Length: 116
Length: 119
Image (cartoon, rainbow over the protein chains, first blue to last red):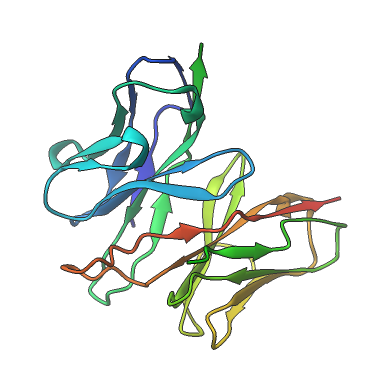
């Protein structure tokens, strides 16, 4: 079964500084990977996804992520953080099985705090 | 295009009662998944329905059940509520399993959730 680890529960970044949120996954075949963001009291919004092809993917709100198969990682980055980026971020991995059926498994999330 | 709609947004119940939550997926989406979100456990998969059939179920007791209607709308029910059932219940819809070479990458579109408090 697939699993996702987000090693950082909380991260504090100064506004304007760069950001990297870590995500490691475990899955035997080629995974498809997602990053979602959740603001307080809201549902999850998709930031970006990796399915195949170019390992550097661009998302909304200036975010990008890089798939590194050798490290089983899919870290999320942003060059300059804005105060409105403060939220909880979830990495998710999907499994495409022979039957075609798949589910998404989520990490426990990383809470991003942005300091002035 | 309307997003995923969940009702009610907030509800308070007491132990032993039951609750039914509703989810209307994005038009054209035939897959509906349910997740329970709590501070300690994060997002935990409950079950997924596709074309009125439950395709997979997470590791939850039988008190948690669901169904999907012919119009893809879904409901989940929790019977004999316990204090530990207090959580945000999230519904997500999708086109279904990802299809390589197409725009369907299996991404989930989430509703805003139903916040259940059990007293």
